[in-house]
Length: 232
Image (cartoon, rainbow, N blue to C red; front, side, top):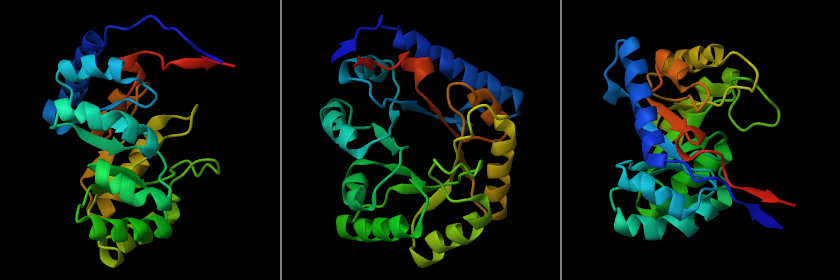
């Protein structure tokens, strides 16, 4: 089994392009460019591909797995202590203490068992990363996230019962469906629950997400290029 070599992209130039497109989309929506936070999605990317993005000034990154992030980021953060990490992949309840130690934002809270475990981990670690509730706007069986019809009650439980620092909502629209419908739904759920932050939009659709109020966009391929693949 061998890793397939890919031509190395100019990640600094790609980052500049993405930032320019974010600024243009925000301006078109009548918003300041700094109302949108770019999370550079570094999952599966090796440290040597992340370093040039750090050197270009990016400080907010997303990872899908706790274990992968634990292997990469302590050394990278030693050189760049102002880095902020977002967990954007599913979190197992038995990994909550590790997640609380490493991440500054956890975007994928979607069930009471996980919310309770996070609350306990935050108390034990004496650290309180921001939390986003993941909503499964497409109600896809294979995806994580609370169903839209259960979102209001779950949000209230996270805030009132588990005392989590809930800042906003996150979604991943179904592939092949019009993303604006899902972004509009997430925006409405956030509005009626008094939440200001919306994490929505990835490489294929982040300008659309900004038009619908995204305050956080999660962009990987447009910055890093295609992820390294493995030949079987």
